[in-house]
Picture 1 (cartoon, rainbow, N blue to C red):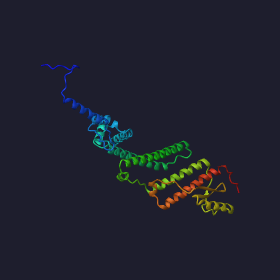
Picture 2 (picture 1 turned 120 degrees about the vertical axis):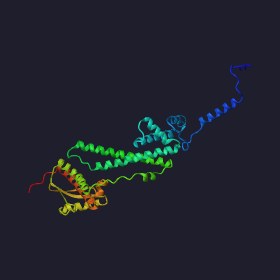
Picture 3 (picture 1 turned 30 degrees about the horizontal axis):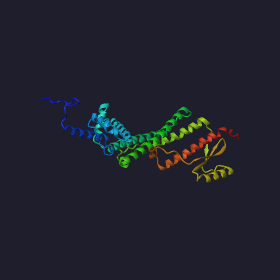
Picture 4 (picture 1 turned 90 degrees about the vertical axis):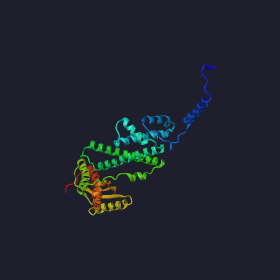
Length: 321
């Protein structure tokens, strides 16, 4: 016998179906409204399609700040995969990304991203320090102002980048600590840098080149009048010596050095900071303590010479005897 349709023209449903549909609706609603805890949420990335589904349905419900950190983590993992040559090409890299992250908690994934970022930054920081050490010894040809300006521009940019890297490293370390990571353990795990050494002769040559380059530029610009330096002031006349001793007495507390310099028949008193630039580590390691102290003295003498040549440029030549 044919069943009669209801008023809507549909067959009557079994009374068992309605409770099942209601339960399913409640389950889906609960899933849609469930709050995801970033610390415990597991990443689902069995393959790229599964990962795409998880990002669209689950990760999209996370706090916007957590989502931003997740995207940064994905990029750091991709960079690490490429730097290790683990995979190449978009699809292969994304597949490797899924293998790295599948079933990790969000906290562990973000911690991994922070650690990878820290290692990348510390490598760049170390490489930049090496480049700065090398550039510290570069001297342009005397009179080549364009080259000198370019060298100073490069040095300035390197110092700015070094400061920016230090700030980025500090931020990364704070994030790692907040996620429960240990930065000191990361430092201990860094591979030891191979010692870079130069010979004693090469170190002396580098130092001489640094000093002579500065001296040559002053000779070209201000002329080659003979220079005499008297650290003790013994060769000064009585009045000039008294002036020298008074300046010297007041300069000690100010960490200022006073150097008598004779040029064009006159004694001039140079005042400058009692310090020399730090030599690159590989150069310093090849010199003994006496040679390092000698470099500082030589540097100050060159500074006094440069100052005296510039100051004497307007002085008349000495009278002939």
